[in-house]
Length: 569
Ligand code: FSO
Ligand code: SF4
Image (tube, rainbow, N blue to C red; front, side):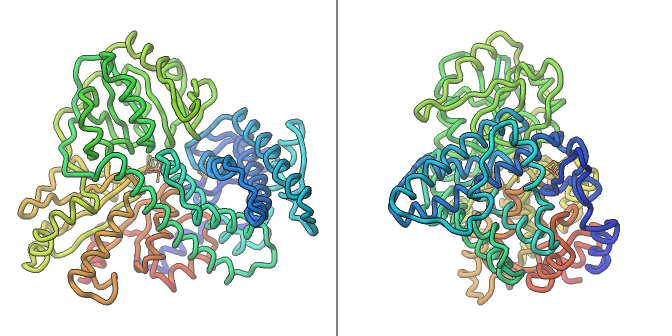
């Protein structure tokens, strides 16, 4: 399918990009599942988020912009409220798709945010700072009884111009992804003040009605620059604490002990859980995006970290049923659980679901006793598959194999690499990625990261001279490793431009962490990225055109056609 046809297909079917939320509804178009390719605008989203929660998320982001405004000023006066950065990260992170579905939690977060905002403001006023022409987010005050009403006034549609709205949301989603990665780094005691300052600056800019489309395009690119920084920070946090990922075979079978399944991305939570379970007779299995934990040397010392159970996030309903034991969510993606299984689901950090027990940190430590004791009363997991999968090809491991890889490229044994990082999802069209992996020529290699890998990491695609044809770097944030590898190859082959490498980018997206990964790749100069299975609903036709004209962003079509296109045939 030609690009033009694809844009028409994506945008043509929309009655209008200006479609309004239903009066009792919501308006959310932040993820790939936005209803009808436009927006979720009824009583609940496709993901299961209720309109009440969606609107409270909008209000939380609105109040967070007010905090960012005062915190910027506070920095000038060296007023340091160390909880503020964390609060901003958490507000952005908790509003990511499938992270937190709990109305009460959002009520509490808004109340706390308003309190903190007003504390900083008061302190600044005592220093003699005067505030004129404040944006509503910096001065609005309400209580629980007024939250719902205010929430409906501050959402996405409160920006009238569709291009400004589109860019504001694109930046917001990039910031959400940055905050998620920044939060994981923070849990491992790594902080970048520059990143925190940028997030504040960008949040404040999102309230500035004088900014033009060009200004916001520039801010979008700057968001990508800081996306690279935050991913580098998280890489440093993970590798300095847990060692560098290395080639690892991960067991996908089960053994006969009671067990806990841990999902999400937070390796600090995993470490705490393993420390608390190591002598308890309770096994631990990873699910979905937690799989890459097995690649880190530090986690190999735990005999009770048995393997990975199941697949990507969206298969959790069946897989949690057969797992039998408790499940701990450290982050998204949660599929709203129904019935008795809820009693086995626990959340922590920014994730949450009403009716599921949430475990908070006290002085940085989390007590998982309740989960461990529950596990002991439940049957061992039911086996759903046997065997092993291979991964651990983050930058250090690939650099260790560099001679082999470079030789394979020079001799023509490897003709092309396909970066297929990103997310998996339940949409039927995502079979495309399995078909694509099966159909690409045998002298090509897939570089992957994120839960997108589950579409092809159990296929038997073989190897090229000992180099597996699917090289998994890790979680979605480890897309950073893929960029580092590309930059290293550029240096080895003495190329001027990263786009001269035999690497094609066929990225699958679902939620907002994929947005920051995309913006980071653009910031690194990567061009002609294909994004699927559908282009984001939040891109207005004009903004989509900017991405297409300046960066060659494209969608996906039929597998055979796309392979021909990628291979230049
Ligand atoms: Fe997947 Fe979900 Fe990691 Fe996302 S589990 S979809 S991009 O949260 O963050 O890749
Ligand atoms: Fe719809 Fe996605 Fe928003 Fe959920 S997060 S309400 S599925 S657009």
